[in-house]
Length: 351
Image (cartoon, rainbow, N blue to C red; front, side, top):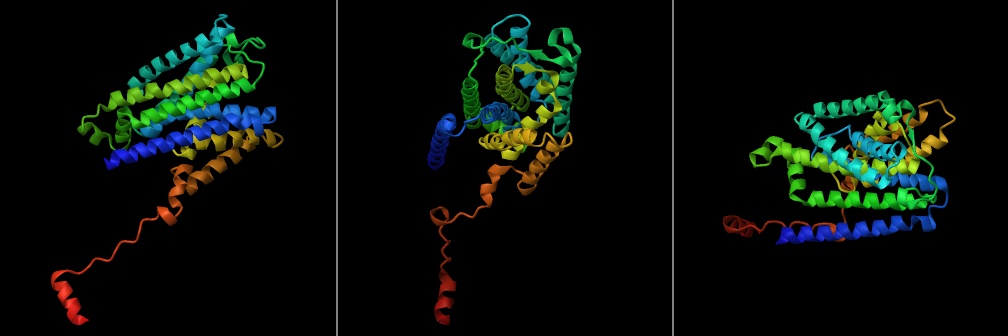
């Protein structure tokens, strides 16, 4: 009963904090977001936060470090863009189609890559995202090639996922990030989440306890593909353009993972903290250091990431463990053991 009560209190605390944060972020346009640049940064932060929250399911909870989640991001983006730009289809249908394709591809790729472990799985996923980028650039008659795809200008057409007011995309991205967070919370508290964490700690021990490791990891990968595909679809509708590098590139593949690492991989709030720090930092460096030699902004960005991970390799969420707990949260000092029996007699005679 004590353990169950503690879990219930933790769930209520997480739920209350989540609602408070959601209300705060929803109110930002009323008192903080006053320029288009800040609005753009905030929207991109929420989009990449959702993608990283998806990554956290299989790589954070499950310990299968993937550098290929840009595959799902790109599939969602290209499915929505191709259906709308090349075939005149509805963008909402493209969004759903992108999720379906991403889940199917996750199952197919997972059937091969999830039999690998450690660095071999990471390298395989990174190589696959580069393969997707090459293929997308090669079949230019279908995907637009290296030139990319530009969405048609539809003005204000909500039925086609087109909004002249960019603030609408901010709230769409906020809903997406909230759903990705809720999905991660449900997975974390579910039997699947427990099995994923067991596999991350010791796969052989988990299998000895009856966990079907391959099936569990495959399910986790499929679930993690959904937020990534949705993030890609919303991204292309917001930006209005997509090309192989921005959809499947190595920079995007690394960014999705690094956001979670910096915030705290395997922690529910890790990707949230990482995205709030790194995405605005990246956008700010891109705008402020544009006059410097090419790549200087990336050097500064990389140094910031390295310093954070050097200070706390487990991410910013683990920094609170270093803060000493005082006051009501500190446990009372242990009472000195009282002597009994012969020891008490000796102590009394000595007195």
